[in-house]
Amino acid sequence: MRRFVLLLGCLLAAGAWFASSALAATRYAAPTGIVSATATCTDPALPCAIATALGAAQSGDNLSLANGSYSLEGKTLPALPLHWLPTDPTTRPIITSTSSVPTLTLTAAQSGSTFDHLEIDNTGRPAMVESAAPLVVQAGATDVTVRSTVLSGARCVIALGAGTFEIDDSTLNATRADTCALLGSNTRVRRSTIQPPEAVLTTQLPPPLAATNGLIEDSTITGGLDLGATAVARRVKAIGVIGILGQGLVVDSFAEGFGSDGAAIKVDPGGTLRVVGSTAIGKNAPALLSPLVSSEDPIVPSKLMVTDSIASSNTTDVQATPVTVCLLNFRCEPGTIAIDHSLFSTRSPMPAAPGANVITAGPGNRGGDPRFTDPIRGNYHLLTGSPAIDAGVTDAAAAPSDLDGHARVQGSAPDLGAFETTAPAGAGGPGGSGAGPNGRGPDTHAASALSRLAIKPSRFHVDGRAKIQFTLAGAASVKLTFARQLTGHKKGSRCVAGKGRGKRCKTLRTVGHLTVPHAKAGTNTVLFLGRVGGKPLRQGSYRLTATPAGGKARTLRLTVLP
Image: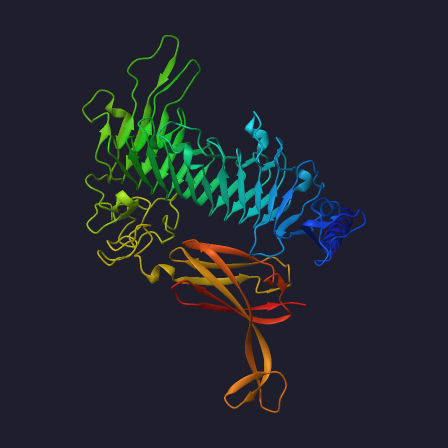
């Protein structure tokens, strides 16, 4: 009997889910849309004002925004999940507020919401910047996904709740020298950029631009990254007075610290930070730093554990702080560093100095010039003859690819540092002497090579939220051309669309283009709603051709369903 009740409950729940999915619709909004209490906003030719569309929306609906700016100041979000996206995927609608409260505050009632290819701003100037964020995800089981979106404000995003919060392929712009992103342990940031206004890039120590207890990977942070105890930074480039500060794990990453009071990588006082397969560059600061801990409360030593890495500085490569004096009634613990299979030349304290045991040099360490390709221009790939090549050891915490996305262990062992040498010495690959100033290959048309073109799903409805993906060897603009397959007839050697007396055949007719003007090196994801030039594609089969500037085109097939 109990099994029957459980089975019935599952069937009823499944029925309710399918019913709610079937009711999901697309609600269209425009900055000058209609205002009507009875409007359903489902006609793309008659879009509503944003407040009207929000009022008409049901759980799981798409909220399709025409290009332009939408103020959410004074407006209340419905207590249900929505999928926010542009009507025309080549545009980026702006959601904004000048209020001292967040532009968007999401609670458990909005769990499951997504934001695609938008800009979310807050231009408020309150005394407490925490309240002027573009996006705040409150505590609770609130799952939210942000894709290909720009977040701008004094605080870019605050997400400290128990739900899963994900940011992919996005840009976070801080409008002042403050922590732009405050992220909890269930957050994931991938293929994104977090950056400050230029004015805050000084040698004084500002707050870190991003602070997380979760995962951040394949991303760039200018202004410093603060890692909590459960945080993981994988294939991250971080630059600041302190490049990376904190605890947790740093793997296959690059960190640069500038300013005499900074460091490239610094462990939190009393914390443990593990660094694997990474490059730390100190400019007027140590490359690796483990500080003294002093407190009236019980404390533990700072622990920096390093393997398969390169530490290079014009002051001290590796620096740990022993306890020499301690204030009365205080407890003091040294900063410690355990380093093996890594390259560094200078250390403090020196091996024969008092307190030298705060640095434990394990097996496999090397000294000497790392032989970076062009450090003046920021290219820290390895030249032929570098003592870091094939000098590492396989580590379970290491990622399968380096900071460039190349597979690790191209030779007899992993290379030290963030970049694996992928070409023979002098061949001009990413690790060779012909690498360009961006460190991702020579400055030729080969840098624009496009590969791994895909669309997921390949069969979809208009406004069905398909994703076009491709990989570029170097940054370039990419033209996407859509050609519809038509049935025709043979006329001589040609296939002519339409009916005729000749033998039936298939031909293609170009229906439009989309341009991705600033596609980045690496993996790119473009939201595609089945519309070109604002017009929906007709039902049928199409060929998509992706052509990078100066590179070879790639093609694939897709189907638009009725």
